[in-house]
Image (cartoon, rainbow, N blue to C red; front, side):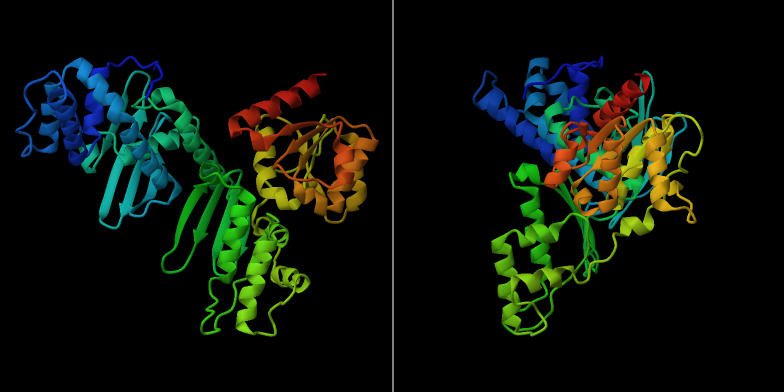
Amino acid sequence: MAKKKSKKKISKDYDFKLLLQSMTVAKIKELIDYYNEKFVINGPKDELLKRFSTLKKAELVEFVDAAFTKAEKDELYDEFAPEIIQTIMTDALSLVSGEHKVEQIHNASVISGGKGYRVWFKGKYGSNRASLQILDDSTKKSCTCRLGSIDGICMHQMAIYLMLLSKKAISLDNMPFNVDEKWFKSIQKRLDLLAAQSLFKEDPTIMLSNDYSIYVSGDLVTLQWGGDYAGRTTKDISEEGGDVDEWVAQKVVDILLKPIKVKTKEGAPNKLVIDSYGIISKIMGNPKLKEKILKKFAKLEDPDLPSDEQSLEEFLRSDLKEQTADLKIDPPFEAYMGNEPFLFISYTHKDKSEVYPIIEKLYNNGINIWYDEGIPLSTDWCNTLAEKILDCQVFLSFISPHVNESDNTQDEIQFAINEKKTFLAVYLTEGDLSPGLKMRMRRIQGIEKFQMDQERFYDKLLNEINRIVSN
């Protein structure tokens, strides 16, 4: 694999030894076998590398590091490093996400200086404590696990690197290995998602009655389930070459039908309790999935279960509750009530979990913001909204398919357009808007958030707002 140049002033020899320290004994022996095959049996050298089977890990590292020339190390590094580095980072990501099957992060504390953590990992077979601090000219690291205790980069230390990367405290240049940037994009996508879920306490996009939750963020789908074998996993649907909507719809149907035992005609389907994703509409728009559900229901011979498409949609919607995000997520700050210029924020409450973090970021950058958190209970709601739209300097509208279902949000948009307010739209997701809304929005300047990573989106949004305000 071609390697990108690094800004770090470290030698390839040092990289090679660190790689050895970060490998298992079995993997180092695989490297030796590769060397013997490539450089001795089919190469220019005469003697096989041997007499290493009884060496302990630290001794084995020194033995191998001393046995090879620089050119041999370069080739072996290029052959083995990508797999080793990617495995360590993937395992570390599962620790950070809480999806590791053996260990979990028990607690973490920031090391004084701001670019480091001490983390306690607890697992089925014991616990490990790791620390990592990035300094201007060096890195202090330690871990009690086997790899970490002999100065290798273990998954625990790499988890701290990922934590620091997710906080934007460090960059890839601070990593102990050269990381392929193209491959790392998938890791970065997951880190952005985890940062959002953790910081903003994101609620599930879909929830079912059997304590099964689904979070959808672009191509990433996080599945979380409870019970005796509770767990959590995240899939990148783009890597599987599938369509996210179809994949999620199929998954939801499978979960709905899972309790039904056709042979004994027993069981009852699970029910949907939250659907902020519009998955019911997607299921009803898929003939194969509708047929699959109705066929399975018919096997139970239960008169209370639907037998046609109309009654099926009513059944799927019958237990839906208000989105938990509406009940749990508190407004991040008080709406601006002064006389200076301010932004009016237009959004649907179903998008609250995504909108609140964005406007909090703007608020933290010194921008005055008014949103409907600021309406006193005794105030005429419609008049207050109209007055604030008239008085605002910029009308910032967050657009998603949920706007199709919200007459209030559509009224705000129409009023702002009619009053020729300075208008900026942020498209949260890629989805169809109603023809009327499309027609209203056709000349409105917009930012497509769903096509950007988090850092680029915030930079774009702040720059656009500052440009508009300065004009």
